[in-house]
Length: 384
Ligand code: HCA
Ligand code: CU
Image (cartoon, rainbow, N blue to C red):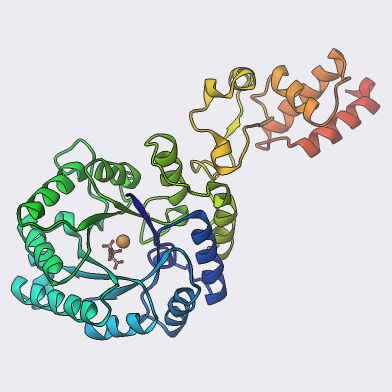
């Protein structure tokens, strides 16, 4: 079964300038849980005392989701994480020769360290879900990743995560997630090892979601995402888009409570102080808004003419925007919405002219302003 891991509180907080107070983190975790997210990566507890408190606080909430902590491959990181009472532990360590030499480590030394830490965690908590991530996996020598993954699973890891740490993968090219995940699963299966495969896709090339879906098609069963796609640099997969596409196009049989998505995005956007881009799929202000005259006319008859996702999936509606592109059909539709059924042709023409003038200043006319325009022009017909 596919599981979704949300890392807004860990990867998302690595967005430059983003910090969530403990009480905000708890509110975010509660909403993620109510949506049906399977794993909430709540933070890396040794980084600061506040992060430790947040991880422990969220772990204590008895959520349906598994609450997780991030840890380097260091005993102390694991101890502090386990003291927080988490049910999931994500351990990462690089395996590329270039990075290992930076740490003055050989591959066998690195693998020894990874296995030791995983064995320790498993020994202390038999029911813990343990993930091992070879950092920058897809740019590391494949043989190193396979050896490290093999030993990590033998030491007790349940999940191997393929991290595209710098967002280099491109579907359909030689560097693609479908082939990578298929190959790794096959090679591990030949060794009689069947861990869950997770994917963590960065968005440096704008391809994070495409790569995550590519991995999913190859049998990855955990996908990492964050609200607003927050994270280092260009961030990772946007949670809302991922869930909408999985529900809509992949027909994933999960009962996600997606109508709470807009509330989650408002909350995160407000306290991360990162605005929701107006054109962000699913949650952006314009994601279901029709504008040009030809579009609105067709979309009002049947939204599917210019819409492929159902806004109702996230509790939203199709909208019509009034600006310099608007035609009479869009205007009539909006007039109806404000209860103005009796506008004659002459007045409607004048209202449309005004709407277009406002649009040319770079603004849209919302329904409230439309009322004012109608009122004004009705009273000042002669002047218009
Ligand atoms: C990081 C890097 C990481 C780790 C992912 C993981 C990445 O910020 O520590 O531990 O699964 O992109 O490789 O986010
Ligand atoms: Cu990352």
